[in-house]
Length: 630
Image (cartoon, rainbow, N blue to C red; front, top):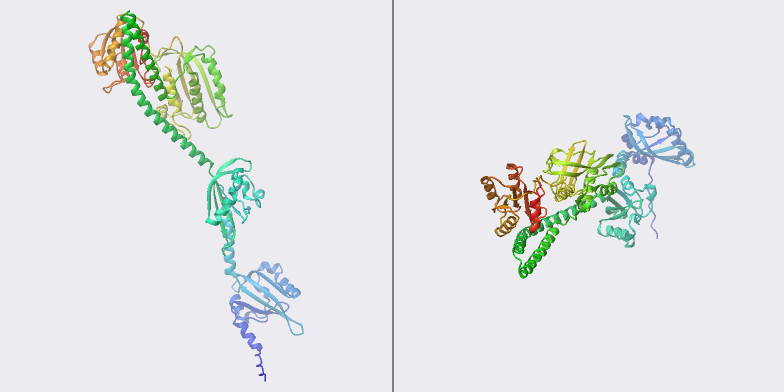
């Protein structure tokens, strides 16, 4: 027998009223078909601020802003609800105190059992906090988008899960050259080189980012115009709040300048290392060459004295073997010195007018279009003996320096003429060919001017120059028995003038006519070499005073009444070199001719220039050098 079912409880209208009044998070109230309020719950009182007695009978448009009322929004809400059965909206509403709140509202039609219209029920929820949070989030996203788009040094863009571009900032447009409309929706592999594409680098980059959480690398990428640039790239996976992979963030930076700076730095380091090696090697070979040349001079000089002292054929033949061996030893010494210098001079007689006109064509290629290079070269320049290639390189070096000193437009002028020097520059005398490089650049201060010929000194930024250019020009001109002068005014320009001795005139120092019975002060620290040199000079008819150090020579000069020539080795022990001795003697006896000798080809390149006799020298070499000065 089935038990009787218990009837379900029925809620009375009073129960519904209590239920609705218990809801405080929602404003729930009834409207008459014309919009006047006919019921009011506790939630409506809390949200709107009106009590039941204050609001019943009022039109619900009271809660709308003035702008919404003027736009007829309350009437449209009722009309829509009556026509469609429901109206849903969100927007600003007003509380009793006039403050606004963001409301989510629903308006439903209420009918009785027969379908007759009773009114409308309105439900309102205060969503101000949620709306403000959403606005803050939207503003944050907007600010972030503006921030990303404002970055111009980095290409920052998003890829979808397949690698297609979905966003594009201004930095990406500047670096890559594409606008957003050109690339959005295309695959990011378009920026890779053909070699990277063949190696599947784009796909491997995305896989690495997913598997390892990040991919970072450097490599060549392509701009829109096909130009390669060196890029630093980072790819990060993007996941939503649930951890689902939704794409990639890609950041690219153009670091081509850094790569070039690193390359120049490495070149500078290599140049410095090479120069240090050459300096050490030069000191080693120079020291050996000095001692070796002394020995060769003794051997060859003694052999020549023997040749001139006997007519015995057998002795002549043996002595000739000795001189030939000494000559071969001298050739080896020259090769060692050439290796240490790394830049031997190949001097020959040239016509400077023709050579300079040919060089101007080369110089024109080294200056930009906004710098004008002009030339004024005299037609009747005398011949000079010089290494033409090194002259060309020296002028090119000076022209490039002039170009770098000009910012924007400017002028570089090459001028060549013949002049006479009377000792005003490096004690040079006689006819010279002067070659000047003039510019109207920024000029050089007096402090810098005093140091420009120092090796490794430069005013250029690091990596833009080695600091060796002007020192090489200086050394080349000195080695060519000439001089160099610099004139500069800051803000107005600079002029470098090279003076090269003309054939048949330039002597380096003023000389005296030849004669006999002259007295020569010989300064040579090697006893055997001193004896051989003295014997040669005596055979030529000179009286020789032998000393073996600079201090002995100075003492001898103070004692004797007359000396017609100082003949000194350059490198000697005792703290005073032959060059320093010559300078001191020149201060006391400015008219006294000085002849220096050394096994170093470039031993005399600073300060005053003196005639230099290379070791090992022969009898004829010594005779010619002394004859030119006495």
